[in-house]
Image (tube, rainbow, N blue to C red; front, side):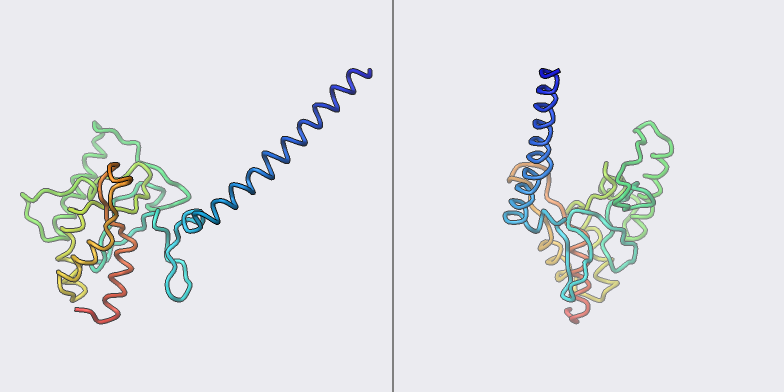
Length: 199
């Protein structure tokens, strides 16, 4: 009986020690380092306006449909841009439903942005990302939307172009991926430019 109790005591002590280290000390250390070294990122990269209201996250796309806004990539997350239901459509390249959706989006994109039937439409303007929450669009996608946004807001196209450039993120580590325009940050800057009366 003594050997059994000894083994049981050892197992219980090991469990308690590991629980304290793995479920208490380690998470607190990681949390502390993240808060000290990467405060903004550790808290969701939130965008807060001058009144202290959270407007969104730099990491999550939002739906914008008004003419005065740059439009993001399409989303298949829930009913669209649902951060609690991040997902793609899971439709493959042979799916008629996907092909029909893309053709509809191409037509809509050309109409919204005053493009000709022969004008090429950027892929990210008509296809959803894997997460459905991509916060970026390609530079070409943003450039094609500049005339529409500038006209809707009564702003000079060069002013809008400068804002697009300002909110274009470079490639990661200088080599990974492609530059992209953060739609939420750009649209918030467009609102600020319009409210300030900048032309």
